[in-house]
Length: 129
Image 1 (cartoon, helix red, strand yellow):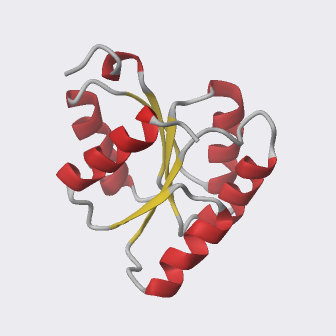
Image 2 (spheres, helix red, strand yellow):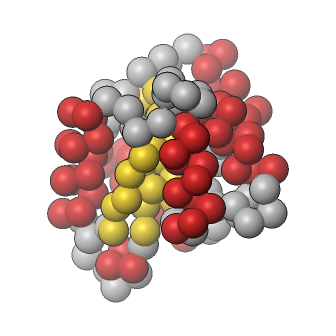
């Protein structure tokens, strides 16, 4: 666990309780500080108030979907530089394109491959866009 991981705050926006609990536990074991939101609007609000180092954004969310929430965050001067890694069970090329068009900095599929996710997270945190 690196010194900087201990200080990285991750905002996990995930409505599925099992996915949220599993990811939160595994990320905390890796030394990340994890906060979470259960819908897109709550994710936008927490991103603004907590200024996380990275957002893991589920794309299929209640209240406000991940695409809309990502577009809002990228359009806001206060949150536009926070890297967003989109997560979705939909692995179609169109979904990937849609996530990048919304402003996601990277994208990964569910079920999550933890090793691959951690590599993508490190790359994004290391080079905040």
